[in-house]
Length: 259
Ligand code: NDP
Image (cartoon, rainbow, N blue to C red; front, top):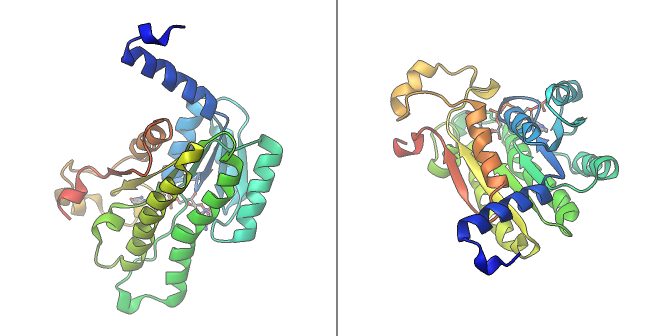
């Protein structure tokens, strides 16, 4: 093929298709059993990826993996905040499924309270799950991505960008994840590994089940909570965009404009 005779658009289409084929080896989704992570797993499976669904609850992870379309998927149990469990999960994955192409860190917890009322064990749990956990999975995945490249998306939050009273610890964990994402993106770009972050607003999942949507509608310019699939589309967009790294993408119905 004489590339000098091809238009830029044509080259981009060819390159993107080749890039998808290269990266569509294996996708690992932490927090994939429910909510946003499950929607990401569903979308990746629909796009022909083999997906490893991970959560602490093995039955839930396996049940979700079974519902995914296409190839044979895997459900594994792993507590993202525990180094030996993360290492064990990646050992199992690389032995049974091969090298990891995409990693999505959607495992997360909140223990919202005013700082004066926060228990130390809750602070540790939030930081270890939301921040340390993603660091551990990224480190383990990089080993598997070094030779052929790959892409990572961490799930942050609009409150990590804007801050919110009653969520100081959660917001710190997500702001930390943002700094981590940008720094890691710089660290591994030369290996063709991209690292991005999606920062959702209020999304209808178990995490927001106790919140009354009507009470928040006025604060959200688009007037509603988001659907997990709407976040999943942004995650998959970043995974599949060969020239985007170190980016923070808000998916919040405009909530950041009013915070
Ligand atoms: P859900 O509570 O619906 O799902 C959380 C998922 O994470 C589950 O699969 C859960 O499975 C898993 N998980 C929790 N703790 C651990 C752990 N220690 N190790 C492994 N897996 C774990 O949450 P969402 O889908 O709403 O949230 C997904 C991400 O999006 C989180 O990081 C959250 O902070 C973030 N987010 C969510 C927003 C929302 O409005 N919903 C807004 C902004 C950000 P199990 O319990 O079995 O381990």
